[in-house]
Length: 135
Image (cartoon, rainbow, N blue to C red; front, side):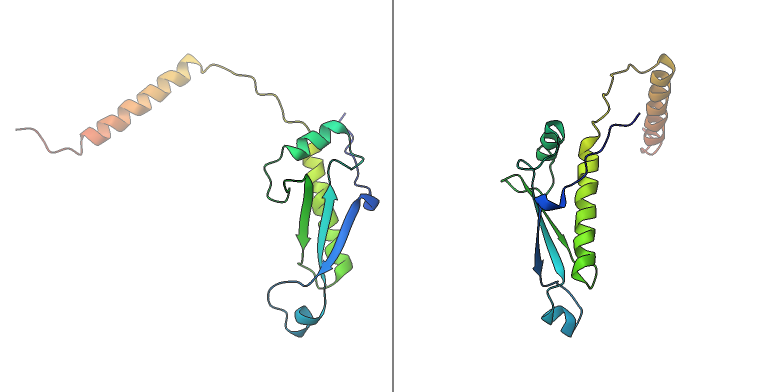
């Protein structure tokens, strides 16, 4: 059974409406339709192990204060951009909720070592054939 993924509580998310960048003409210059989402990981109601994995992420959306900042501006309306930002935050939490699989060190088989050495010898023979013949 897969572990239960915690859902984001919308009350813990802070949205700010900002002006979108890029082309769009008069609409983009007059309407604040882009959404800035701010989510404080430490103050959230997420389980502690999910919080630790989120704070350990090497992600540019996570600032030094432990706040995730997501900017959504793909849609023309603010509610759709807010929904997009919330979905992206939920995807980030989903990734952090599933622990990484443990890697067990294994040794290469004898046949794979032989294939590797044969490949190296073959490559060396090809390169040796490119040299100028000795007198």
